Image (cartoon, rainbow over all chains, first blue to last red; front, side, top):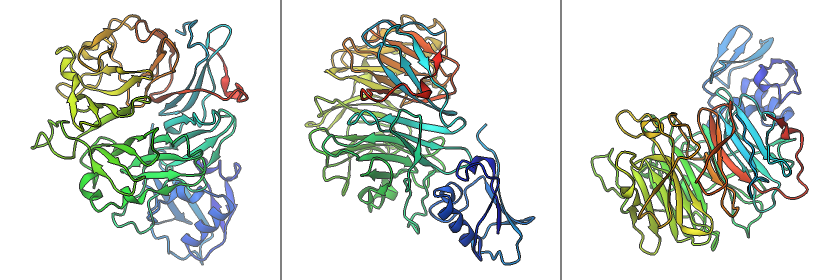
Amino acid sequence: MKVRIPTPLRSYTAGAANVMADGSTVREVLADLDRQYPGIRFRMVDEQDRVRQHMVVFLDEHRCRDLDASVATVGELVIMQALSGG
Amino acid sequence: MIDEMTSSSSAATLLVGTRKGGFVLRADDRSGDWRLGEPMFLGHVVQHLVLDPRDGRTALMACRTGHLGPTVFRSTDLGDTWTEASRPPAFAAGDAHGRAVRAVFWLTPGHADEPGTWYAGTSPQGLFRSDDAGDTWQAVSGWNDHPNWGTWAEWPDTEGTPDGSLLHSVIVDPRDPAHLYIGLSGGGVFESVDGGRDWAPLNQGSTVDFLPDPDPAFGQDPHCVRMHPTHPDRLYQQNHCGIYRMDRDEGRWHRIGDHMPREVGDIGFPIELHPRDPDTAWVFPMDGTDVWPRTSPDGRPAAYVTRDGGTTWRRQDAGFPERAWFTVKRQAMCSDGGDPLGLYLGTTSGEIWASHDEGEHWRCIAAHLPEIYSLEIAHLHADVGAGAHAGTSR
């Protein structure tokens, strides 16, 4: 499926704004993303599987807080961030 | 505002961690000019940037942003290229306390006989170790999972230290790699004699003015703890509640800050030691009165030096502005090992000040940087060149 990458994480994707990753749940998609781009998941999700404070995952237009949510009918997984720290 | 330095410290290289990235500041061997490199990881919060003194080439950078999780980057060419740790410091999944690393705050190279070993202190107050030069990190479970951790550490850390609890001042005894000290803000100083498998508080004599019991076994707030490199039983700390010295055989902290001028006080963040004289130390006092401005007392910046283990202190303000409101954080004061000793400090207002005569005179050698979090001297291996980040003279 298509995954949209925000600018702060594009250092992991060689600048790509959109990449492809496989999986039936958000967790699996992020795991596949990390296999392709090592280290990217830990910048978004902490070691207790909590999405980090200023990270937001959308499945198409719907905000998702559950890493085990299915992406079976989802066209695009969008990773967004509140750019904190000004 | 960059002055020339023409002293024995002119070949120094400084690694600068700031709230907006890392920088390298190098002294030109010939002219003595200081050359500030281009920012590394611009926009990232660089808590600590440290060169491994054992090989003179491996640098680790503790990094995060406001919105990305914490990690460690490694470089062996003074910052021209960086590689992210393949396993950054992290608590175990399913951790009983539910802890997750928010920031890697402190980096310490390990013992000289253990090349490639590093320690990292984090927020919340975890201790991690790498045995492969910072590529993979493992929890020091003897600390992180100690039965007393939840009592000793600031946890949950929502009501304590501003910006979160910190584990800092990881110290390795040069005589024994299994002998370790750590500092907790808040929590106190702790010691291990078995490589981190077990720990004990080491706070006797260190008082607190923010707890009902002024002399607890733990709960103190050491801001910066230092061990003297050639007399490792001599410890100093700049604490939230004063300046202290301990001779380890006695095992008791003595408040040597009581000998500071009353109008200045003995509150601050950093303390720096003379590498060849265990009785000489420098502090940079800050205003710890009222609501704790943490700026130079009365807006008059000065270092203070003791040459007799804290019995007396002498003001060193030559070269500093008459009025200025500096704040110098706990990792932002260092020395270069030269003779006479060069001293350096970085301010939260983005200035770096240097003295090439052990604090007698100070000069601003860099300005207009972001908020400085850390300043470390780097003694580079001969084949580690200036690289792209050496930049141009400013």
